[in-house]
Amino acid sequence: MVIFDPILAVLYLIVDIYFKIVVVQIVLYWLMHFKVLEPTNKYAKKTVEILDKLTLPVYNKIKSKIPTVFSGIDFAPFILLLALYFILHLITSLRILIAG
Image (cartoon, rainbow, N blue to C red; front, top):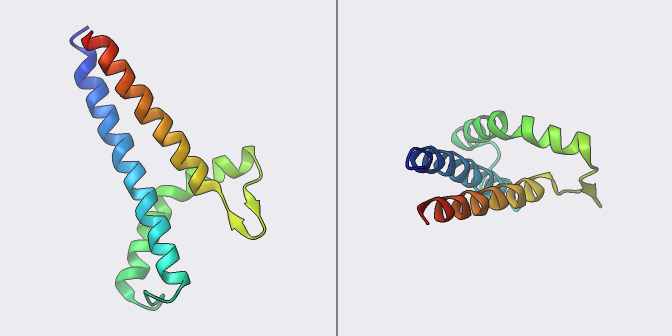
C-alpha cells in the first residue's frame, strides 16, 4: 500500500493546482467586471486567455449536463469548485486510510 501514497500525493497536487486556477479565474473576472482591473490591459487579457483555455472545456462539460445560468450568473465555476473540493477531500481521506 506504500506505493499508493505518492500517487495520491501527486493527484492531490494536480487537483489542488487546478482548484487554484479556477479561483484565480473567478477573482480575475470579478476584478474586470467591477473595473478594478482594465480589460484592455494586455497582461490581464493574456492571463484570461490562458485561464480560459484551461477551464472552458470543463465548464462546457458541466453546462452540457446541467443548466448553470440563472439570472445571468454562470454557476459552472462554482459547481466545478465544489467538485474539486470533494475530490481533494476524498484523496485526503484515502491517504489517511492507507497510512492507517
